[in-house]
Length: 305
Length: 187
Image (cartoon, rainbow over all chains, first blue to last red; front, top):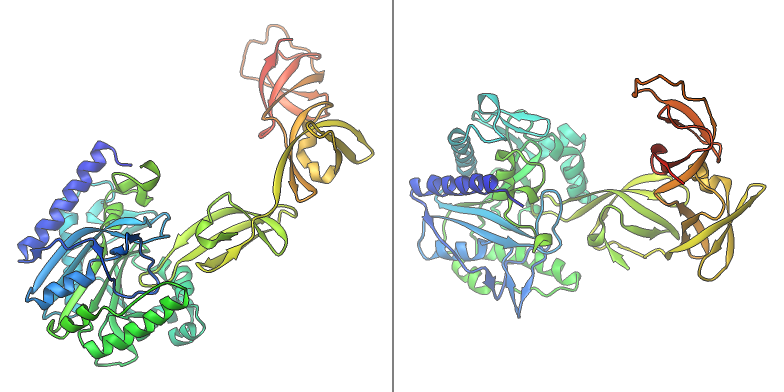
């Protein structure tokens, strides 16, 4: 639960985030939270609402707005994911998601650098900001001066786990090795963009034109904390359909229902080259506010309700 | 039946027929990845600890654990006999099972015994117990420093540090979690 001072800090960060995007000619949108169908993602468990769902991210509706001709949009909204609760997880959390037509994932990495360094310049007095504008979290003092580190998933697994990413993936241990061996090392001196994920782990991301094994997906890490996930969006309806089929199969194997989002696929072809990213705002605020538990930066947690 | 999403610090689960308590817990979920439940567990019988990562579809039995209020009756050889205060059933525990609890255990004391099925596996004493001081050096009158302590031995044979004014024959209250002196008790 937040003190009055914490609420003021959160409010200042929210407003500054909005201003950043509005100054860059992004259109703010607010899409429905409650939907009759979700994009099939086998590792997310949605809450049902009557016979609809609370969205797990605003991706579906925001991409449909791109299909209608929007070129730069952003949204700050709450998302809901069942059975996610821990030091840096809450079932209901605040997401910042934005899309930029004509861009790819490298452009988005640069915009992440700009967003977070500008917030840091605006709030040098915040508890999480130390000397020379470093973000200080736990035992890390992270310099935000760009360019930030860019590390491929293959390089990271080799460097920090001494393992080949494809072998780990074939063994079914990708997530476990990532969480225990790789993530804690990322973004310690300066933020890290971990990028070029195996295609199987980027269901909504475009295949790299340089290496068909990988998808143009990245995650941003600061002080070992995963903050954002971005893609060069997959906009080929045929390939998206076949990737969704795999996800739907996985979901159905767990006994849950899932179906093909046909309207989404119909409109996908008219989006054109686009990059999109989702950033966990509560986690970013956690860093700026110098707290250790996500519950300390939101007005209420479920246990208080 | 528990699932992995029920895991949290302090939860008691059964693995391979034995009861375990979760002593550390961390939820992680890499972006677009699966939920991982990282735990440290302690075997409630052997005390052996281990770490293990679970996934969403892992399931655990609930251990059949029951707490019963019992009274300490007497010790014979290395067997410590207790009686259920409701059913009057009698059981005994070994010296090893009682461990440090023996520092504070006296006749007729009411304790909580934890059973795994029919098997008693742990004893919880009252947080505060009053014990009689059997051996103490006399208080050197005029020593008003007030900060000094001296060692005494209580009726169970346990030794602890107390303020200098505590004398042989006094009753003192002790915190059984720490073994620390709390206060002198007036009869």
